[in-house]
Length: 347
Ligand code: OGA
Ligand code: NI
Image 1 (cartoon, protein in one colour):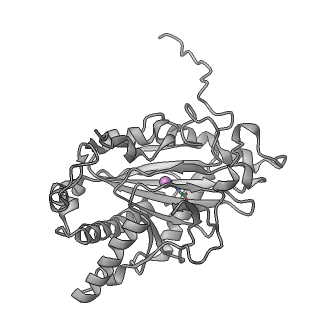
Image 2 (cartoon, rainbow, N blue to C red):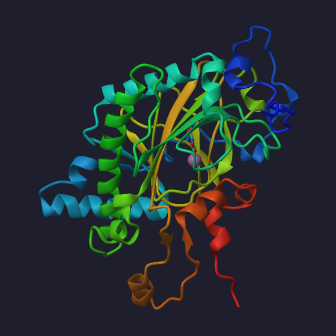
Image 3 (cartoon, rainbow, N blue to C red):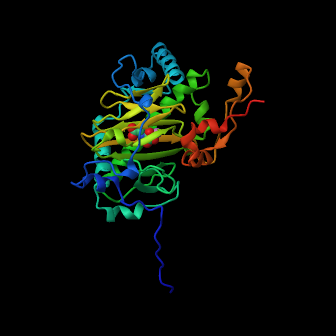
């Protein structure tokens, strides 16, 4: 057999994880490849109480009382239009399960680097992958973040380590998907459609669900680094949970707003809205973003009955979810919201 040739791959990061770097005692400043200088005009405004994302009460959204449900659906529609981000409370997923899921992910990130290596893959849709930054092959600036992505639906995939991850992630993914389904149905109804209209059109029963955990260690100079720079997500609805550290910021009316959710709430992202993850110098922040999308082969398109109702022409072309995810992971997504790449050119 021919000997295995190993070559130095320029896309390999200098450190396997930001955790390794952040754990070293000597680290007192941000190394140059991580330096992310933010425009002063782009700084977040964390202290404006007028600016917090809307709250959706899941118990009312799924209430047996038509009045209660109708009111919450209206509120949901408004939250989607005006913010694209909201928090969902009273959803019934135990806070203890959320904590166990975060703990399981933390234990994964804390495994020795050697043990995580087998999950270092390059393909976007590999069922399990972990790594650092975003895409080290194209990142101009390294991100202060490690990640673990596991596809949990339509086929449930899991890790055999750390102990407990598999069981917890199965329960968490099922419960989270059930909440996402109700939110999607509520959004469908808020648009004047049948509750299951979007789910049917997007082949939700074969829909893609990804458990995407982010690990942001404390950073000695948080103003000089970024966890995830401004981007838009690819899913239909992304549900996010976090440990007790904040850091997610959402762009609303041209201002960055720090998301401060109630303990145990899901933070939900529906529209293609800019958001980013900042880092802090106090403690490790862990978040788990759970994008729920259409089936991979299913194109998302403007809804014909809504266009007819408004007497409008489609402003976007359709694209399969798989292609859209590729677009979202490409450098093009840094320039403008990925949805804007699908805009029909005005003539
Ligand atoms: C993401 C994301 C934000 C956060 O994973 O797409 O936007 O707060 N995460 O970790
Ligand atoms: Ni995101």
